[in-house]
Length: 472
Image (tube, rainbow, N blue to C red; front, side):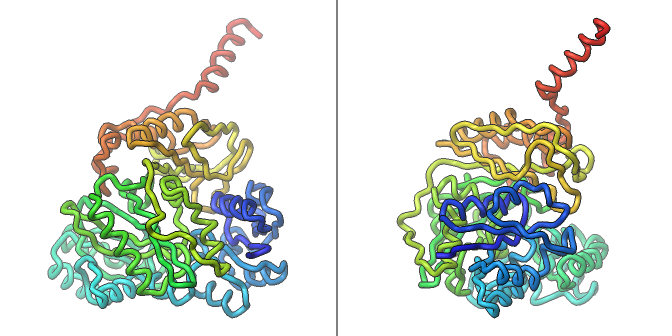
């Protein structure tokens, strides 16, 4: 087993990995920039190393990260998610330098990290994919040709895309012409790859993903599925496990298909197969995420399996130690992403100092975060503050627990999406499990929430009014 792991990430995911290391008796080291000098994960790690230049470049410089790992004699590097986690050059550099990359081999990242390559690979192996263009769409004329052949609406996708960037939905030929150059330029800007392709856009689908684990000994299993359908502009907002719409038969089919794909690409470590499931419960491979997912806590909650620990054990060469028959799904879990943003102001990020912080607790409540009172949320990074995950014996219990937990949460000093999340989980359709990827678009009334008055703020306001009245 490893003696020391360098965590090449920041924020809540760095804290999550540190916790796993502590429980396994492994020393943790982290990197940070000056902008992150007051971050909680630095205090939690055994060692911390300042890197420059910041604030973004430091977390992307693969040579400097590997140099630090060698200098401090770390056995392995855990990339978390984002930044270098799906950079095949990072995995390849680790392989060359004798540092273990806690993730899949560079060959798997290279293949599955490119949506177009992955799509073509699936077609070659008779894995169902959504009808679309044969290869990249080179120009606007080509795009229109494919749009007419496929039939509108269609979706433009960046080959190297992720996180909802490089996607444009075109309902007709005029929109396709308008969005083509936008999608192409966005793909080049964010992924250094202007290549885009076109698929039929399936309306009102469910976004279902299956968690897989594979070791160096040929063992591959899945840990069930997550439903990530509640999205805003293709960005996930709430995730649940298991899905409420899959039959047992479809659940088994999707799980078996995810394992089959993982074996076809010789996948090792944790990964996620993402599928689109239409209203007739037909499923299509969409992409594979070759890393730990933001929403992994919901799977951990319903399986009792620590995915990060498994990642580390697999990377160290150990066998999975779990067979498919050992994986049992119990209850229902919901994860809400708490974000420093103002939903009623175009979801603009809202950094600044947190003047008060109180997190909920109690049975079945989990917090994955790295913020505290007086912490200054920087403006340079993804505004995700933390993840709130609840577990219930039934869907109804899980929903009620999430409502209670959100009601207990106190974050003051900055705007957050807590009131918006409260509006979602209190909606009748959510409580009944009636949602797909169009849920947020079809429920604009959820944006009409009134900014809740925190009890503590109310006490302060009353005390101030009394003081003024009495001339104090």
